[in-house]
Image (cartoon, one colour):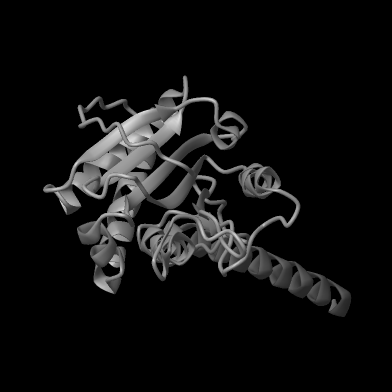
Length: 247
């Protein structure tokens, strides 16, 4: 009789354990999905955009008096990455200090910048520059994009539209850049934004203001975000300029 009682007790214990397990499974299945924490963070929705502040180090770029292009480019580029972060757009700088990316040659410096875009599998490369001209009356924004590349053209148009809202009083020129090493060898959609003419008094004084550089950065960020979110092509007409641009 004692053996039978122990056996019955064991059966009861096993049965109760099974019922408890079923209850726990039922409770877990009723947990809201929002409480489930994934084991690994999700991958970013989009690869990064590479922001390339032109020139640097021994290469000052366009220079007018004591004002050099390289510092303005870097300041706007850093502000641009901050603005993109606020919009949830991943970005990477080719340089974050005053340096030249190659002491061997100007072309090798350009190649190092393109290598960043290649290595990071960037969806776009946006160069930040300031312009110069023999004509001191020339001013406004220029946007240059890769030849025979609709994604580059679309990105340039979106940035131009955003800049035109920022400064509707300034001329904006959007044009293809042909036979240039930087554009011809870039692995992705490529646009260079010329933020103003250092040889123009009004443009130069504006670019020396911190709030103006911040405004330009935020306008470019909005344009990049628009191109990323809206891949459909938009065609706009912009004024043309006869000024020669030198990256």
